[in-house]
Image (cartoon, rainbow, N blue to C red):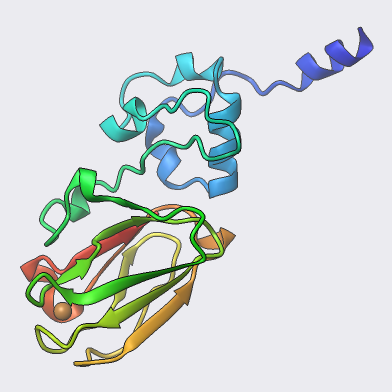
Length: 183
Ligand SMILES: [Cu+2]
């Protein structure tokens, strides 16, 4: 009785941010908490969300992995090698490698990854397409491999602080669609 009262008194108000856009900015653990506890609040979040975020409810997941597919937004629309069903789900992996200069030289391969905090991502230059780099466009992760180079690798460990969507590009080839994103 007292416990039930205390519990219901601690429920968050249902007036959550009405537009789904804040999902992009949430830290992952908050996202998980919101997704897991939002059965009631879900009714309050309806219209206005990106399609992927609105439709991706994975019922009955449990275990903290029941998140929705990230909505990477329009930055990737013209990214070489990107498609919405080509998002690589690497959650739970300790390490992920992305090719720099994939697909003939002007793509990141894969262009979009979905990872867990703690994952080390290594961008490996393929040697094709000339000099490339990895530069953050928007988002929490401070990606910056430095000046464009023709070969090499760049390693970045994603922490809790980097959770969320980060978009990035190659500065010499951004206008040619050499772009990528992580979530
Ligand atoms: Cu490039």
